Amino acid sequence: MKRIEHNCPICDGNKSQIFLLPSVNESDPAKLYGAASGIPGTQQLVKCLNCGMIFENPRYDAQIIVEGYMASKEAEHDSQYPMRVNSFYRTLKKHAKYLPEFGAKVLDIGTAGGAFLDAAKQYGYDAYGMEPSADLVARGKARGLQIEQGTIESHSFSQASFDMVCLWDVIEHLPNPKLALAEARKLLKPNGILLINFPDMGTWQAKFAGRRFWWILSVHLHHFTKKSIGDICLRTGFEAFHFQRYWQILEFGYLERMAVHYKIPLTALITRLTPEFIQKITIPYYASQTTALARIKT
Image (cartoon, rainbow, N blue to C red; front, side, top):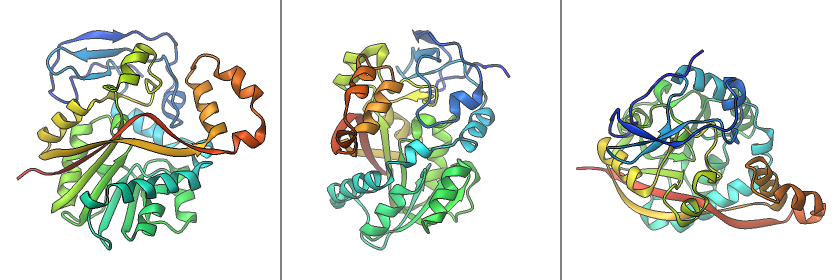
C-alpha cells in the first residue's frame, strides 16, 4: 500500500505548498483509521495555492481508509453516549428556528453509536443513520435505532426523501467530501436543510495552536474553515446561511484522556492527579468546532 497524490478536495487544484510535515512514522491503516480519536503527527498536510484549503497529501486510497473505519472499535467514544445525546438535543433546540418542524425525516451520515438519532427522536424527528463501523452499528441497533452500515456512496434511500441531512464531525473524515455533499443533495427535499459540524481551522484557538492544533489527526483528511465550508457548499449546489459555535457536554475524565491522547502539555500529569469523582463530572466545553447550516441553492 502506498500513499498517492490527490488534488484539492474543493477546487481540484494541483498546486500546493507544505503546511505540516509528519513527526510520527506510522503507515498501518488499521492504526491510522481504526479509531475516531486517530493519531497526531502522522500526516503531511498541504495548503492549496488556489483556494487555501488544508488537506493531507499524499494519502491512502479511499477504499483503504473506509476499510479502516469499518473495522474500528469505539468503546471509548461510545462511553459518552448519554452526554452526547444531551449535547445534540440541546443543539437542536438552539437551532430550532432554522430546522425542519417536528415529524420531519432526517438522516445522520456517520452516526457512530446513534447518539444524534436518539436526540432527534426525543426532539420529534423520524431519524435514520448510516455508519461504516460494524461495532458502532451493532451498538446503535441494540438501542433500537434505525442505522444501516455503509457510507453515503452506498446508501439504499430514495432520492428527495429527507427534510434534513446531517454530518456531525464527519466531513473532515471523508475521502471525497464534494461527492458526499452531492449525494446528500440528491437525498434532500427541495426545501431541505444540510447540517455540517466540523473542527474549525479558522478559529482563534486553532490559529493560536497553529501546527499543534488538537484536531490534526490521522483520521482527519481535510481541515475546513467557515470560508471553505461555504465554498464546498456552493460547489455542490448548497448555500451556507448560518454558522454557530458547537458546545458539547462530556465527562471531565474523558476530556482529560483525549487531551493526553492529543499530547496537550501537562495533561498526563493532571489526569493522574484527578480524583475519580471529579472525572465523572460533566462539563460544557468548546473545542473549536462549528455548526454550519445550508440550504439547496435555487
